[in-house]
Image (tube, rainbow, N blue to C red; front, side, top):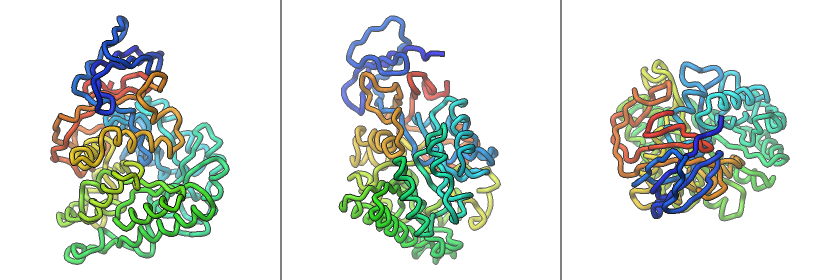
Length: 430
C-alpha cells in the first residue's frame, strides 16, 4: 500500500526560515514556500523544526530471547516516538546474533513491525565469548546486509582477535564497534571510581579501563587500515585519545550517549539502580568533556544505548541490578537540553550527529539524507518550545527503567515520517 501524500507547511528545516515540504511516493517531491497541492493531507508545522529522520547506531531490542524486556515491535514504536526512522539492533540477544540466520530474523521482524527500519548488528565473536570470530562474511552477505559488528555488553579484549576482526571487515567495508572495557580492571565494578565510590562502598570502575582499550584499538585500526567505532565514550581521557587518533588521520569514529551528557555519578548516592549503567555515569568534568567533544566533532554521533530491563532486574539492591537505561524516547530532548540550549550545537549540528553521521558510519544509504527534493521522505517534526515531564508509565517500551522519570525536559516529537508514511502524528503513534 502506497503512503499518503503529505504537505508539511511552515516547517523550519534545520531551524531555518519556514517553508513547505511535499512528501509523495516515499520521497520529498517539492520544497518551497506556499506550496498548494490539492490532494495532499496537510500537516501544519508552524513553530516546528524539521530534521531528517534520526538514526540510532546503538539500540538493544532484546528479541529474540528477552521479549519480557522488549520486542522489535515495542522498541521500534519507542524509536518512532523519539523521532528515529532507523535503528541498529545490538547482537547480545538469545540466541546471539552471530549467524546469518539470526540477523535475518531480526531484520525481518523490523520490516514486519514497520515503525522504523531495523539494521541488525552482528556479533564479532561466537556467542560473544571472545574466543573465535563469528560468521562475519555470512552476515554481511545475508539479506540483512550487516555492516556493523559488535560484542557490545562485552569487550573484545584479546588484541589478536580484535586485529583479525578489523582485518576481516575490510573486505566488505564493515566497521567494528568496540565496547571499551578492560575486563580485569572492572571485575565486580559498580560505579565510577572516585572519592564517591569509596564513600558509598561500591567497587570503582576506573576511567583507565575504558581508555586503555580505546588506545590499543585505535593503534590496531591504524596498523591494519580498518574502520573502528568506539561505543558509549564516557571519560574525558577517552575523548582526548579519539581526538588524537583523528588528528593522525586514522579511520576512527565515536559515540556519546544522552545519559553521559546529562547525568553524573553523584546520582549513585541514591543507591537507586535506575542510575546503574555500563559504562557508569562519570564525573561532571567528564560530562563537560563529552559535550565539548560532541560540539567540535571529536565525538561523531549521539547513540542511545537504549537498554530495556524488566522490573525485577532493576527493583533490587544496586549490586544485583542489571546495567542499562531506556533512551530512545528522550534522546532528542536530552540533546536539546545539553547541546542546543547552551549554544554548543545548532539544529544543523543535531541533524549531523543524530542522522547524517550515524547513517554514514553504519553504511545506511536510505537514511541520513538532507531534506531536499529527491531524498527519501524520512522526516521528524520537533517542537523545541514544548516542555514535558517524563512519565515512565507512558513510554512505549515494554520496560520502565528510565532515569528521567519525573524530570522536566525540553522539546517534543510531534511527527515522524518513514518514507513518507506517518508513524507518529501529533505526538501519537499512527
